[in-house]
Length: 392
Image 1 (spheres, rainbow, N blue to C red):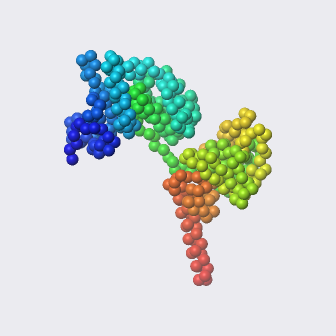
Image 2: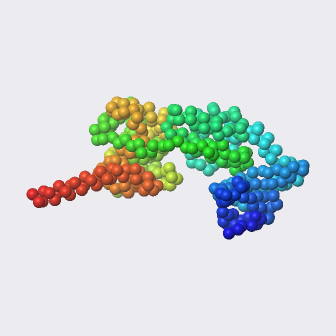
Image 3: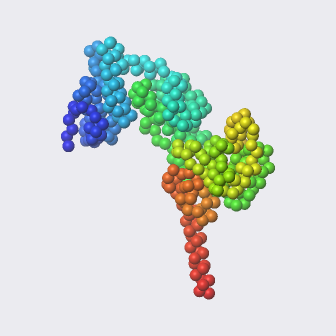
């Protein structure tokens, strides 16, 4: 099917455009909008689509990238194109203005003046982004001009990061930088995303470490003897409930109901952005019933700062695991894995794991499928033994 090179842009008509043929001599096929003269749509051989404004300024033909289709809709791109055309009519070259901004704006100025305000308004984990910028990214790129940061410099940064941090952590930095520059392109501060083309690090997400019954006993004993009362109880609480580290730290007494028929804890917001209830088992209930409440503090596990929650339980965790004779590589998150193993080995299903751990999909719980296999094998052996006994 042949598509006309000039038509009135609509979402439907643009969605129907095929990728530029691989055999084509040109890298991109170009289409023109009949509503706004000069507004173009370029379609690449992979199907990627982006908007462009072609114009003449002082007798010279120029082109200004407006952004990718999808990030920009037709209404917004027409508004931007007309805005630039109005500037051109007044003797202002929009491309020259953009180049001046690119050469003047530092990475720090873009992050503090544009990205973080946007993230704070639209992203729950904006504070985590801010921490990455403060401790890692800004010391490297902060004083550089936004438009001068290259793919090579970002790759070098990620390679250096990988020498001290886990691949998964490095990939979070990758994703953050990719998002930052994607917005910079969308908002017209740069023409291309320098992170595009960089490959993520290969992650080993299958790493699992479960505490055996003897290690659990030693962990609880070491927690009882640790001087940090609230951190020690927090660690026991994580194992008893299987909740995420951040969910345990944010737990408040107002969301705990120990008097209901089925004692529960309400989580107003989880990692997936949804609320859920955690049913509290007898040991979790007993822990909370005996947990001292700090006056003036609503958190189950209060910190050193008045009115705030426990901030950093890692030091106490490392101290307790060392006292319990558990290897240094054992992570706080591995307590969550241990909870899952206790459920499955106790006869629970992967659905029970999903419900208890608050996984958004069953796919997240599949990592424990091998435990389920072991349990089913044990059950099959019981059947075999029963038949054998019956036969004498």
